[in-house]
Amino acid sequence: MKFILMLLSLSVIPQNLMAASTVVHPFSMDFYVIGNHFSVYPQIVLSCRYEKIVISDSAEYITESKAFDLGVEKSRTGENVYYKVSLKDKKSLAVNGAFKPTKECMSELLINFVDNNYSVGWAGQTKRPISFMLRSNNHFKAGDSLPDFKEMISLIDFKNLDFLYKGVPRLQVNIWMTADGNKLPLSPTSAAIDNETNMPYRLESF
Image (cartoon, rainbow, N blue to C red; front, top):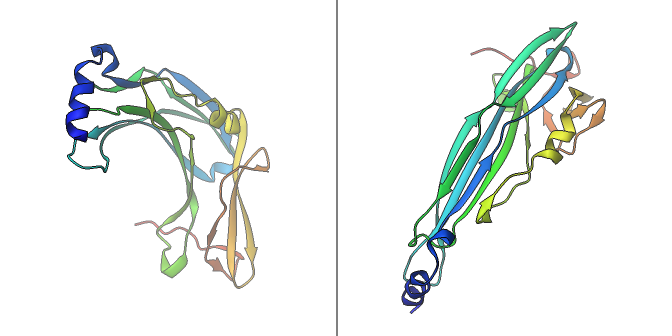
């Protein structure tokens, strides 16, 4: 019965309501990495999903995603590194079709900050770097959506970024990410402690 009612409802919905999309327009941000402590890997990820028509009361979704690396320009300013991160071209993704109900889309901004010097260290993981992921708080929405990354960008734009390491002797090293010396609203992480230095173990190359 649910299947039949869904087909009947789809038959009377105007075609211009049969789509959902997300569009990200060009933008940029600037920040400094103190002491070149870590590398920066920014992306935007566009996703659309729709409910698969099934003869049951449960909902099943099919999702399509596309990831785009952002442009990164780096230059030295003394001991620090200046970053300009930008999206130069508009990106979009859409889902269409009368037989794809409950269509929703969203776009996310993700920036991965990967330690150049220190490793996680736990269980001998000295080749796995410490890292933090900063991501926008976006959700799937019906219809056409324009994501707003302003809140996330404001956390780091025109600021000095760094990792803060605090060793707990013979236990672990607690690590935070900071902007202009203030801790960002990210969960801290931890690493195995090298008792000779009271810091994480140095990162080994592959």
